[in-house]
Length: 288
Ligand SMILES: C[S@@+](CC[C@H](N)C(=O)[O-])C[C@H]1O[C@@H](n2cnc3c(N)ncnc32)[C@H](O)[C@@H]1O
Image (tube, rainbow, N blue to C red; front, side, top):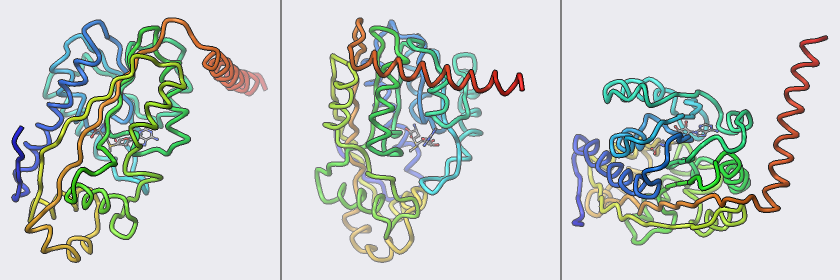
């Protein structure tokens, strides 16, 4: 695929949604036709959800996001845009929105409830300890043969333009919203966590963005990603001439085995115990 170079801010929306269209093709392929009930964590305003729902009419979505402004990002406007995007595309009947912190929501969910748990650009928001726990919980939530698919922009730059963007978006000197631990996790780490949680048939796909952004378009994207103007000022010349490039998209899918491994039996038991204790506390509180 040929590289697209943007210079005007007005060109960005169409190019960005084209990236998600390509991502949605891969998700639809990895999920397959049998998957129905799908939980998407950190859905944002439906950047992936909408093209995926268009592509895969078999999917019903539970869309989980806290839609909150935090030090790591300002996402509170996303709730309204998600609702309006779903309405516009006539997808309201196929989607239920849950406004919650992901770990709180997961803790309320029964084992083996979902055919798929997916995320896009959510793993960059959490750290390695949370990733381990999140992947284990995805395993618990999935039915046997259920599928997990997670995508994120590669933290490993293929060229100087990609490196430039990764630095701008992760170094606290340049960004108002520095990540907790990483620009995104190394694919190897995600694969290791999936394997240790009991997943098998792990697949990794890499899609090149082939999207170069320069000049005013670069400035506008940096602003929308909450990168400080000082970055633009310090690198104005190279942003005008060389620009930066969106890193490659990494998409990793894995399947839950039919039998639960010993390590997950222990994890499931402790989750059940925690849920039972929570219910007990509520009941005792109500009686008092
Ligand atoms: C970078 S955005 C990704 C949005 C969209 N999925 C995409 O592919 O562009 C990360 C999303 O994760 C959500 N998020 C971050 N931490 C969260 C948490 N602890 N619980 C629920 N949602 C969270 C944010 O609100 C935001 O919408």
